Image (tube, rainbow, N blue to C red; front, side, top):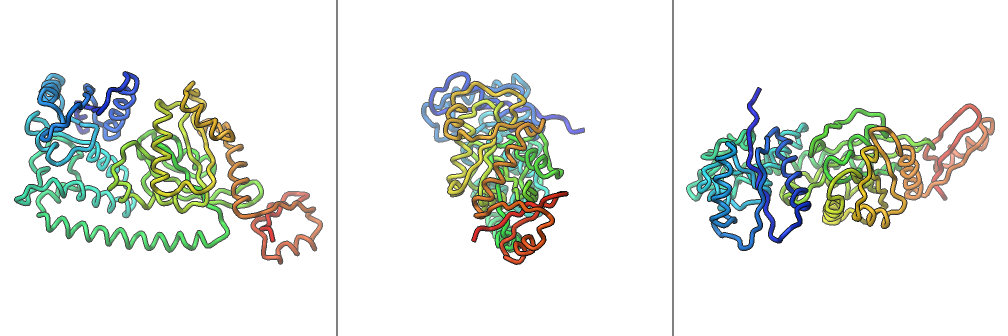
Length: 406
């Protein structure tokens, strides 16, 4: 069993924050580290009044980081922010410890979750895009000299001896391979969208319970790990509604604050499900801290994807863990008075969510529901011949037909 590596966790702010705001950021930073089985032995925060061109931090702050890492016997320093190649290199030299920044950590978390060929290709591309500006002018990658952080090299270690030109060639190959996979997936998606099936994308902050909701609604097995970014690949399931109508539900990668733009681009295959879906189900964790920040991040990412121009169902999940008396949540609920309160774990509220999905799908398709006696064979046959039949649900005495309106 590999020894758990210890991290000194450093968060930074460019304006003064309240203690509770600092704690929320520190908790998320520690959760990111735990996603790779790293342990934060100590967390410290700094206000950056003036950016130092060499290290980002002031000389006094760098000394505090170095001394704290020594005191707590850390294996490496984690900076919960994106660092330039220069800042990262100089911090390593001045502290004497390997330095991992937020972008590199998220790449490695994605790498640990990638299961499909496309996801693995995307992780390789993201790694190379991260490493490229970290090349010395001589062509030797600085990461080659770092060491000390398990997971910070992985599959990318073989890239550390490549020249800048070789890396650019590899990036080009990866982009072509990813594009080929995307074309194949797009063909499948077009066939799906050309049918009369309405699609819904489950979106929300990472670890809010989207995969659990998908599994409970459709009765299918999905990954329901209590981990950040447990879902990377587009995951689609068919949901059969009470009327007999079928809709497609798509799970998506969870959002997180300050998600690097090159990762948004690399993992656009799952994110674009939100843009291409007919409707969105935005999932919000009722028990989470900083609900306002998580809601703002979710809406910001969806707006960047140009995905908010469609019907939205707000699903407030994990109500079994208690609903915070949160001003931000009250504000969101005031804007969405028809939000569905549910617990995917206990099943409470799932029937209401199914009903809302059915109402939304019917409105999008322009359908009407007709219930006939099963003995009325002539009228039932006429409905079938009309070419407007979406679904038929039979029981002992009646049949419920969902018809497209004329």
